[in-house]
Image (cartoon, rainbow, N blue to C red):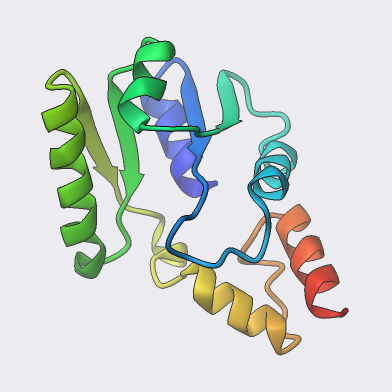
Length: 142
């Protein structure tokens, strides 16, 4: 949400494309993640949240967008993000990727860390949107 808020300060409209995870084992389905994002972003204007199907460059073409915003927490994120940015540019040379740093209060967070703390019953309410905290609590209390 921090990156979305920052992007909305830079662009007239922001598309949040939530991708299916082919390599990770997400705790929530793509549909659940899209619904949580909609709930967390309620009240934000000039924002479209959708599931991403296919290549990002095709999504950008469809929405007449040419800039990708990616969040970078640490140098360790950069290599993978840099490779993706260069591949996207190879597929469509007009694409620009802008990397944004999160607020200092979130820089150490990862979804893995959040899930681990939530799984052990820790309070994550100050770290994630209310809907995410609620859904994680429900998932881990089963």
